[in-house]
Image (cartoon, rainbow, N blue to C red; front, side, top):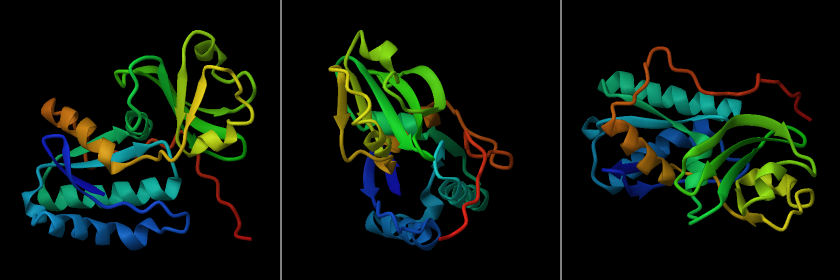
Length: 207
């Protein structure tokens, strides 16, 4: 959760523990960052939300909260590509950034961005094997980020593969991306916007 002004982060509150419940903490974090900068919710000009791909439950909770704020305050909703925000967490001068989010089994959600954070390939859910991303690796350095890299380190062994640890999707990178969209009035229909799940929800029985 963050608050930004003209694309710059002015307050940030995040928790990346596995047992974290979005439903329990999200609204508490919203209040905390607002209080930190002495802001009333009525001062907000727009709300940005990560649109996915990602956790089904997490996306539903985040989008529902964002929609609620937009309806209540009558302000625009801005949707940010989760993988683009993740790619932006790594600054490079050349080569590619491939953000990877852990999906089921040996599968990841992935996309490809150049050094200017411009998308070079559509988002995919794909199973990792020794040939994954070879078309990119054979011609340039590729920087892999996100929690999906743990599935790849022992399988993708090309010399041009660089794995950057401890990078997760963050509201910090969303600030710059959301301001760019805000300036262009690139907003969503609050009533009809849905997260980008990429794959259908599959219920798993608790152990």
